[in-house]
Amino acid sequence: LKEAPLVSDRKRFQDLQFDFAAHIRNPQNTPPPADIEDRRMAIYRDLFFNNLSSLLSGTFPVLKKVIGQSAWEGLIRDFMIEHRCHTPYFHQVSEEFLAYLQQARASNNDDPPYLFELAHYEWVELAMTLEDDLEDLSGVNPSGDLLEEIPVLSPLAWRLGYHFAVHRISVDYQPTEPEEQPVHLLINRDDNDKVNFTEINPVTARLLELMEEDQFTGKEILKKIAAELGEQDSVSTITAGEKILTRLRDSQVILGTRNA
Image 1 (spheres, rainbow, N blue to C red):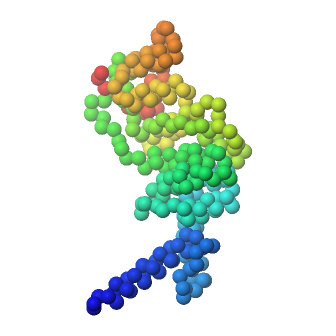
Image 2 (image 1 turned 120 degrees about the vertical axis):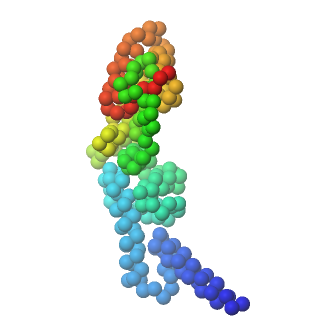
Image 3 (image 1 turned 90 degrees about the vertical axis):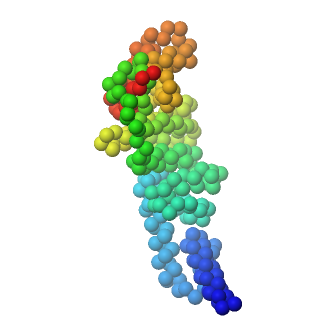
């Protein structure tokens, strides 16, 4: 019985916290806690909103620019209202924003059709910058035979596919329909921690996809691609493919080879 007032006080404090947070997220439709001066609440409303907007605009600068300031602010407000973040880390809030765009925001017909893909493309650069899953280079020969041995793909090289040419979207280029063919991009981080994006053709994308399985030699991969293309003679494909493999190794997308 003696602890009952403490429990009651704790409940009142929790209720105050929930009311405070609810008003911060959605001030137009949720009243502020009682007995708090609006001038003081305005400080917190602006602080939370502006900090979140600033944080996300650093990751999604093109998205913010192409949709305009008003639409961007509406997007941030809707994110605050509709999504509940599950991480306390600032650098992961951008990934939460992606989840919101894909799930809660997916049915908003006022958004440009490329909204999620453009956001994903911009987020990938941050994700690659923070990636720390480095390859164990034991058993990897950096100058091995790319045809006769198994090419080792860097974990800091990711194959991306989009319906829109997201790498070309700008204020002056905002497509309303997807491309006729999928857009293939390669992102990688080099030894100097520089992040690079490269547009690649479907054959190179398929080459990377097969390398991800980490079980075929370069020649086996190229013969498989030749068969998929319906080529009776795979010699020309192997010759051209070896040049692609060499370029990928030179750009640190391929780290080397392992024995088959």
